[in-house]
Amino acid sequence: GSRRSLLPWMVLLLMSLCGVTRAQVEFPAGGVGLDPPPGMALSRQFAGFEDRANAASILIAELPAEAYARIKAGFTDRALAQKGIVVAERREWPLEGAQAFLVRGSQTMQSRRFDKWMLVAGTSTTTALITVQVPEDVDDYSAASIETALRSVQFRQAGDLAEQIASLPFKLKDMAGFRAVRIIANSSLLLTEGPKDVVQFAEQPLVVVASGLAEPPAIGDAEYSTEAPNR
Image: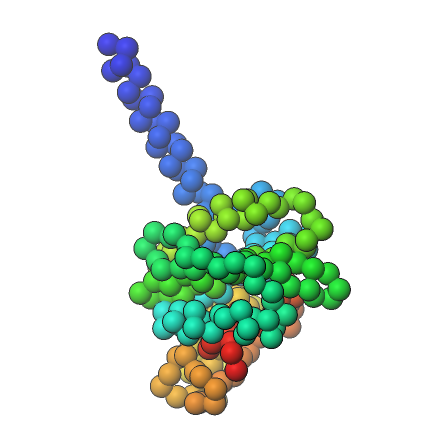
């Protein structure tokens, strides 16, 4: 009798816990989200999360599925060092429904040293590039808390490109023969003229239209290239 009376409460508890877990995963824009560490909130300036007081941030960039192999090939220690990123370790990263790897290191920007995590995750439809940076002299974020957040990464079906374009902080009336490829960091639009969505070197013209109202945090540009960063 006591076991039967406890069973409904146990089921409700499990359902409640599962609901909390799902609710904690936030999607800044598009189809990639995660549960940020305590202290970070959704950014109003870029696709991701930030703690402006401590200059800490998580920036989420979504790329085509075919970008995964190029990024993985290009994220060598040497290539990243050319961008000022000193790699401390790299390892495969467990994510349900995705292949992923993590690169951890540091980077000095504007005379300040940042701890840095770069997670690259790929599904059959999307490549997610998630960069976390925390000033080395800030104690609010442990490596464990950052990695817990990165383990919570989830993918969902994003709205179609027209819906994403409509949500941009600007309107583009004339594309002058170019076509829209994707949204970058929730504030910029990538256009191209040609058949390819992932462009290497000068295969076809590219235009990026961005909002001047807000800027993302200072980051190395290697991890946001649409090609391998070894050029």
